[in-house]
Length: 452
Image (tube, rainbow, N blue to C red; front, side):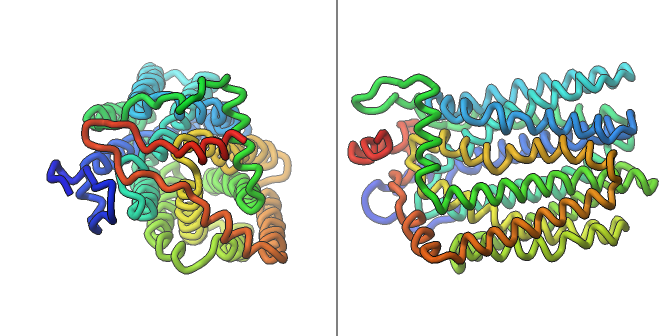
């Protein structure tokens, strides 16, 4: 074990058990990403509050939400290819700069007391597009800065970070918005700047080669490889489709609850407090995710989570008080974070290193892309039938998803598929050396298997 700040691990034998804090590059990656996530949470929630309180139009708020989530549908797949081709650290730095400039334009326009829905929607789209690239790059880099034995803990730590930021960022955004509409956007600009300064210090990795004996393929062919890799794993594919449906439901729940608070005369800060309750539940769920992942198979986690969601979500139909809604978000987010930790660890573990970007993009397309449709559809649904009936609809959809999960993951052969897919990872080399050497290459056998 070298003594250069704890970043090198012997490539032979088992590395000694150490805390994640002993890995310098993981600390920098975690810290820089925490500030970037906080910046996005502050401005992302403020987009919805700004449009909803300025126009009093649920459909306009839904349109902005749709624009912010649309990159999950349009950008994911090409982003995954580019993340596998480019230097991931430089991709992250570029994303931070673009987001910082885009959000700054909103702050400047608000200083002049000007609000255009098309402008807010455009900035939301740009920020979310860069976030897609950033998240794929960050998740792929985790394997380069921690040893395989620490991968699950690292993923749980990252998810706990995001949930903790939700807990702090949402009420902070609501409170700042209550003081001045431009304040959360200027705060985001400052946080993006701090994130950039941190990521610049990250050693990262060298530019990835196209692969031994291979020429770089066209983007369409690379996308097809990622899609085929996911499609060939039936258990994994079904889990992703069911989670996509639940994400659509939760996006509808978030927007509907914001409208409920406004209808009942609540302040924008109340929405932030409700979201903060969900952030606290998510934080605790993320911390429990590693424990849960060690004791239950993925199919058991999927069934348990969706049945629990189906049981608690109808409470929103009958209880409109902010405290009750906060408790509901605490419970649902607690479950969701545990599922996310298990799912991320599962995906990163079974995916070859040079396909992390492409496979991650397919996963995000399925599980998050549906959220954009949820935001757009819910805005019009609320205006058409009202908040109470909209909540009835989303609750019924969750009940259907729970039934599908129970049928799919208890069918004959589901247990065998779970074990087979979860036990087939090509293991990476422990950690890239401190001088920035490239992450572990796959063996020729693995490359042939990936390329068909």
